[in-house]
Image 1 (spheres, rainbow, N blue to C red):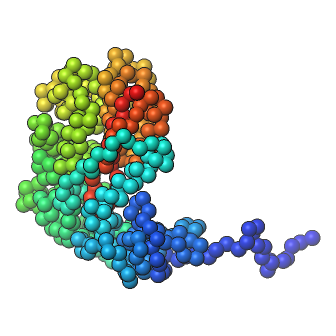
Image 2 (cartoon, helix red, strand yellow):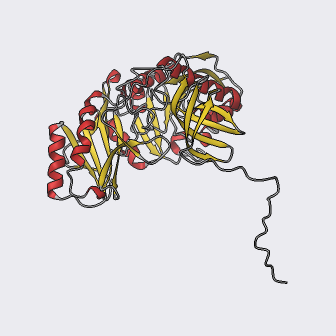
Image 3 (cartoon, one colour):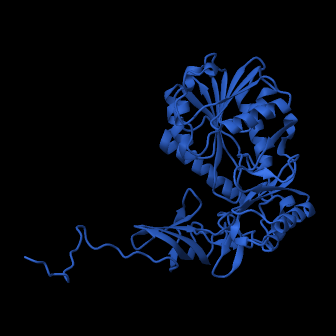
Length: 450
């Protein structure tokens, strides 16, 4: 029999589905506490709200950025009742730019938040607490960022070029006239950059811009079509005015317009200069980076006659300072181009007791030749995914001391579980304030064999 009951509606098992909250809706909320990422948490009509720019105890008006089931993401539009901890946002773009999510919180409270995040992960996931907590490693809370990526996008409807940073909770671009966390030498370039880019003949073919301050100032432009001679002249004149190198990234790898130029940064404490190219990973906070290396070496206590392993070595940020102290450093990195650059950095600094190898460190350590002789100490600085496969084999290398530098407390805690199984004790841990005004947590942990 044919079915003609098209008007019938069948209710799914479990009751009616809750109506979704539309993006842009405003809601008055009471903030109960802070989440680990610094957002305020509120509970309303059976949903959990995560609110950017809100503090515990506040009553705010929040605008919905997105909703997924019982979870709503929002940002603070108005504060009706402010926490006594709240400070005026130092940046005029606060609340719109997505870069500095906790700048309304005093710096000492930011540090306390990050310390709680690290302690909670170690306790909840690994069931451990360090025998001693180290004081937070800090520098200036503003004017620290020596590298920045600037978003550039052609708005075909408005016929204009948007230049700035990504907005909070969206792909919109917020026009930025100044950025308090950029190092001072980049501020004039940032201020004049939008006007210069809008003079180029094919704005729709422009990608992002990267700014860098180190041994030199530099500007990298990503472009999806060849640049005209007139456009190249505009770019060259702009960089010459600001005494900055010009790098272009079209097809292939980024290249300097002047092939004789190179970029780098200095580790003053050890009288070392490390060459760098756009696309390479470097720490954006020069002062905290140097203090981090110093603390890692202090905790690791390398001796002159020791052989030390540096995993995820990058450009040699830890390996080269280690090489000024110990008999031999073996450094391992997953990307061959970085291995080559690290080896070149060692050679240019007249360090000949270093050996660099390429290996996939997301896989278990194999019986590579460089493993055979073992190591007195190990230093590792993995990406956010952590180093689970690597740490499973560390005890077999004979290392009595291990310093783990982490950019993700969750994976540090996960890997701590494995290290404890292998007989290591968590002797010391602390946070590294690499990114002030954000909730991003970097940490360092010292493990010693029982």
